[in-house]
Picture: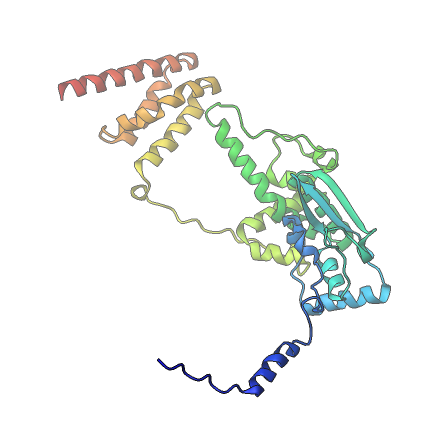
Length: 343
């Protein structure tokens, strides 16, 4: 077999191949590196996000121009450690504006440098509740908010929290069990909690928390539930509380046929326990709820039976009702056993 001759070499290709590496005008080492951003190292706390309106580029540029003219920031940045994690809790817009001026404010190890080096206040070892108190106080003071705005913002922040705690406490104590929602003692950093009395209503707690009258707090709470869009206008300063009226939402009533029997029986049972038994007796009777509902499912007109049973039980002295219930419960168990044996 004859060996094929090599194709003639094109010297121009070799010249192009040699010249190819020279097309890269910059080596990787010469390419500009991206400056680290504060957002690479620090998370934004929900309290800061609540007060920080997503600033437009125009607003950030205006703030950046003000910083360039003054060559400083007037309000410090606040950070906090919550359960081992560090958050920015106040000053998000100022930090973004500083980076918009091409300033580097953190190094590769997350240390604050440059314009913010000596203008960061850190709050170590805080809870989320402490952070909300700090951020609320800072923003109320800096923004010079009116009492109407404070009431509206306080209702939006703390109203749902106090309402949820009240529902959990009511559910836990409904049958005499001790509440799992303990009254939290005020922290040293939150002196305004000391004015909140145990058993106060949600508006009362909001009023004490943000230092406004109970009247304003009650109206703000009504707006939060019935007209949240109007509450936003009050919070932004667009309207005062006196010019806003809350129109209660109409609740659609369900017909008895739409409510499951278990829910109807549960509601009647809990009402009956609350009206006829002491807290200790309620706790004793709770384990029997399931077997009672199961038994009532086989009774004709069970809701009517429950109503007659309540009327009959009121004939007994208060101290004897628990014993009567015990006897009836044993009778139900015996009746169910005999029914099963007959089957």
